[in-house]
Image (cartoon, rainbow, N blue to C red; front, side):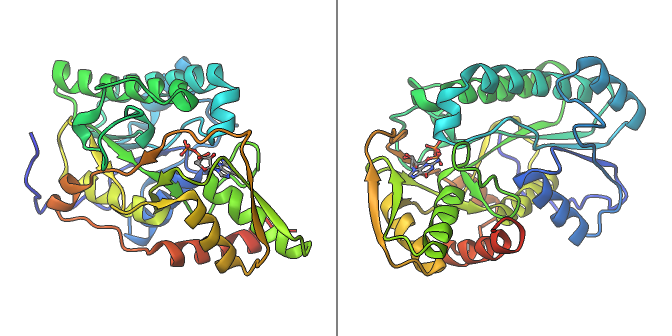
Length: 319
Ligand code: GDP
């Protein structure tokens, strides 16, 4: 049951564990919490805590006893990495999420926000995709392993809610981008990959930039700072075990995205299409009615978000 928005405001001193705080999503959450005055954030990098190690995770939760957990730790990657490494995408994600969700319950966590992905939905789901499309048809093969792991995570959270009354909620973000994204061309998602390719093509004064697939698939892109603000909103206002989509409500084709990125970066060469690479899902646009009805909307327009990400890339990654 969808609960009505309440006036509940999180205590600024509550202990919040952001699992995966160095990644694209986790680092945005830390920025958002810090900006909001939350002063009791718990972070662990991989050298301090291996989230795939069940005993280590149990010990960590028993010792730290966080009140709130945001689950932003996952093995993630773009269409190529997902296709090439299904074992790692399935096994690592299952291990990490089983360990954290189980230990969170045992140690008495008040609320856990599990972050899934829009790729949990069937390949031929209705567009925009409503939350009810979950498990209504076969998945897109290029990210099936990751999707199955995330679906298992949702189901585990829902099982804890049903069997033990745990306040474990699951949000499904659309394709994300922003600072601390992965810009490696073999494992990144499309937006980061094209930003880097456009920057390098401009720097090398190349005549063309290679884009994978046909350019026809459509994707919805959400700046990760918008996602972080949605997460805080859900922590304060959403207490249902039913999944909830997080997106901006608009999509564009990969061709349009490539053109927009070239424009922002200032690369005026040609686009070339590599048809040997897969297109993946034909379209992924989330139906965000449920989140909008609760009172949240994305605020960062795509062009501005890309420009901000390009500034970050130049300051942190570009040679
Ligand atoms: P997806 O949303 O799970 O399919 O993951 P991606 O972000 O990796 O890919 C989205 C779409 O962008 C797919 O149709 C890709 O073929 C296309 N694409 C075009 N050029 C690139 C590229 O350089 N890297 C990636 N990862 N995808 C690309």
